[in-house]
Length: 467
Ligand code: AMP
Ligand code: ZN
Image (cartoon, helix red, strand yellow):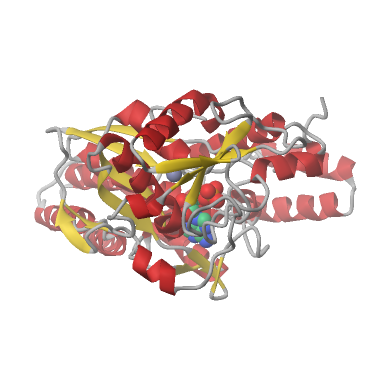
């Protein structure tokens, strides 16, 4: 199987370091808000890699972290090391503790992953539970001459790591000639990045350290936790394209600076989802959550199929029409599956075998899911046509292939496709909620439930418990 490796900018044959076993790390959510469907694309992406690896017989150890401290509002832009902690800012706005905010959105994240049929990672380490690991790593980096302390802040000295920039292409040379970064007064070079920041008195999340009370920078948690749970060298590290720089570049500098060994053999990044040509993001306010999708009568599996209809390495423009097309495709697959379930065995396996070959080789070619999907839909059309015309087709083999393909795609088989009637009831209930006619909304919920569909309303942070 071949994957595109951001490190080498090439498609490469994938072989894990230890035969049959794959160590994989995925940068998980910063838990200060609900995930939007861009975030979920990133997790479906790593889940698709994992499903393919497991399908092909690898044992995958998958770690996905929970960022509940240290991710600052300006971190994604550059290495300003300025801005507020995202979780803490939300906590102050909601008059909650950072822990309440983090646990609430962490639970919501797990629910979303479950709805999207994403296989749970073996472990979801929280940053706040690994402060000692981070402190230890920072100490090693100071000892090895990669980091320095000033006024209780510790920074990574990027000039001490000649390979800095190998992932993103943002080499020191380029950074020096590029736009000026906002300068932290304690930094030797503006492009150095924070490992540890001294906490001002009013800061809520802070821990004692050899450099005084403070809190970790965003990048160090992933280096510390991947070392703890997966060892020196990962087989695959995944994330979204915005992680390439500065986050993953910084992780490489930290991890390789600590162990002296390669940090990850493959880096794989999915590109962003756009809305009207712009990145879907919380700061722009142009985002949808899974509840928005479900409220419009779509299944999370429609969204999953929509993701798979595009290459992970291409940006994807989200439209409701495209989602409706994905739903049609899902219905086609499910209907074909139902048709096959009751039929007996017959001759004629080659149509299925050809499709299976095309499907698997597309998946193994850097997860070419659009090609795999078209092979799958093509085979379903041929199977349907053969059944219609009573031609020979081995329905048992066809069903096994369909099951295998849906499993690899992570499309959970849902017998119930929400009918138009139910959708109308859902829309009426939405209107009732908007009109604050809660008695009507409740009775419509019961009516919908009687038809076998459960409606769940997304909770907003306003509904968080106050104690
Ligand atoms: P965050 O919770 O902000 O750390 O982001 C979680 C994941 O979502 C990261 O892997 C991001 O790269 C990814 N991500 C953020 N925005 C988008 C987007 N618009 N499309 C796809 N992935 C995204
Ligand atoms: Zn990370």
